[in-house]
Length: 334
Ligand code: WQD
Image (tube, rainbow, N blue to C red; front, side, top):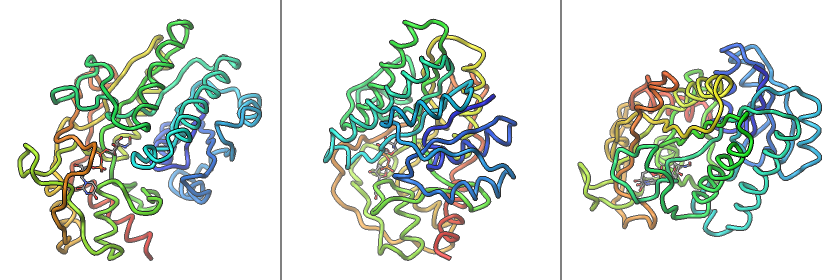
């Protein structure tokens, strides 16, 4: 299929482009390069032998979007483009709503104009909020989001659901990611955080690389195995493969499906830290701090629907995730 990947030079987007190309799909990337760099195209070409067609375009630029669709006869869209820093979204909510909602609506309107009917949307487990028991199941619906970033994901799910009710020929798969980590085993692509990493593994990676002195562990008084937060970490390549299955599912079905993409297994902060120590071969210093506002104790996926509808099951374990993350970070520093 000929697929538009918005945000395709980003962390999850670039890994998904690699898997799409290796599955034989034609990939066109649209990105404004706000949170990624153009040299990711070189890395994708090195890994796959194919250099995707690229448009430096912002989803807020309606004319630019129209040009991209007019020049390509897309069969499907995978929509990653959006701002994604939880803390930043609290500080600049209007920027997040404009980009993640108005920008996405521009994209959906362009899809309607050019009759592109198959969509996979990058959603997040954050839409469950803290309202439900784990493991989180898709039928729980949308919870109470605790930050504007999470609310934009929730609103996009609602917009796509309503859009597809009005256009029964459309298909939409809303993938709720849990905690993507790791990097492609080539060490060529991975996560390059902007500034001080908010997320656990990119921060641990910088401590391991000697860029930071120690990991701040946000609380060890949760009701979990060792008191630290438990999350469902999934290898970014597993997540990318799930997108290939999702877009192929969307192309052969109608209507809207919400699907969790996780491993179904939770690891605590300290369990991840020790896995990373195994990967890098030396101790990672840490200090227990106060809880981070907005954090929940435990979050992991019920993965039955992904297995049933997509035939997807995550293959990689936490050790592989940490090994691949460490290899990428080490290459980055060289
Ligand atoms: C994981 C655990 C922290 C950093 C967020 C977004 C979510 C999604 C994934 C986009 C928690 C602890 C973290 C640190 C720590 N992003 N931690 N020290 O909060 O589960 O999810 O990223 O879709 O939308 O909310 O991920 O990696 O920030 O935290 O102790 O320096 O690690 O308290 O328990 P989170 P995270």
